[in-house]
Amino acid sequence: MEDPPPPPQRLRCAVQHYEWGRRGAASIVARLADQQDPDLARPYAELWMGTHPSGPSTLLDGDGDLMLLRDWLARTPDALGPAVAARWGGDLPFLFKVLSVAKALSIQAHPDKKRAEALHALRPSVYKDDNHKPEMAIAITEFRALYGFAAIQELKDVLRTVPEVEGLIGHEHAAKLMSFKEYDAGNQVKSTLQSAFANLMLASKDMVSEALSKLISRLNIESKIRTLTDKEELVLSLERQYQEDVGVLAALFFNYVKLSPGEALHIGANEPHAYLSGECIECMATSDNVVRAGLTPKYKDIQTLCSMLTYKQAFPEILQGVPVQPHVRRYSPPFDEFEVDWCLVPADEVVTISSVPGPSVFLVITGEGELHAESLSGGKKEAKEGDVFFVPAYTEINLSTHKSMQLYRAGVNSRFFS
Image (cartoon, rainbow, N blue to C red):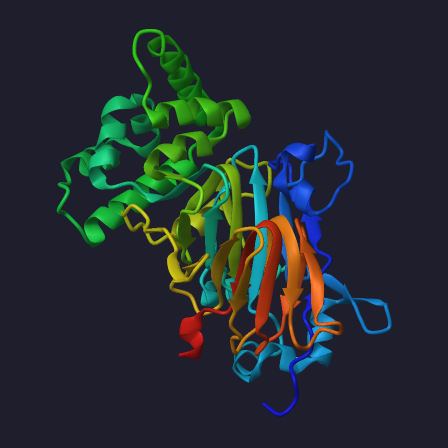
């Protein structure tokens, strides 16, 4: 490298006010976005850090003018490093977010690259880009989600104990599912599950409404004489949020995942999931493609969703993060576009974050201190809660703390460079 890397840049980031977000100061997004006086009635759902046109980050250039990070990268290609620039065409390959979830997000899946290209060509107003969107969520607080189809034994328990579902999926499919054993695998289970799930999702509004009303009143009566299961409690809670929505019944088919702070979940293409509650860090390939089918007032594309899912039945891998140096844990999903480091630095410490051949985005969640880099004029920038920095490739960072600091770094997955 002949030229020194460009200096780290302080970013201004977009807030998304989706209806499911926590409201006002109860949301970590409002606190991080430095909303001095957040509107108590307004949801602060997501903070976006990256170049996606639906919520692009900006920075002040050398003349003090506000410009898009994407435009700055086009002018400063060295900031990405040669390997990233060559593979992803001069853009940041990942989108980094913070989510604050008060109310369940839709049951959804993200298309693979090939399907994303087809959907974008077919319906660009709904599917706004042609990229895939593998993603990973790292819990900041207790975090609840639905992910993937439950194992056959759990599905059989649902059919046994929730008669309201059997009528919607069809008696023939129900009988077939009941006949499978835990070790039955392969296409027969998959095709039966696919047909049963499609029947449920495409059931008429009247049938869904009737089944839900029976189920809810039955659970309300039974709750007085026995302890409801976690899934039953979930059904009651989802029904309060989304009345008469088929997604409330669909939730019974999925794994119910509970993450403790510091645990993470990665989600590949064509896997059904729904975030239910809590706050998390999220990182994904730069895309906003979502195929929705329930728990939402937004456009539902049920046929597409049912046809694209993998119908794998397995509980997801929970990542704990791997220590890579003192005070730093790394979460490495099986995707080239991104990895996330979680740095917990005690007060009055200095931690060196080695240079990497690709770009990084740093987010300070709590604490304060300074970010030191040789390329910075004056050598350092103040870093405090809510600060976001774009750090160019080949830039070593020293973090010195005044108060203990919690910081996340998103970067291109190390496996891409090895």
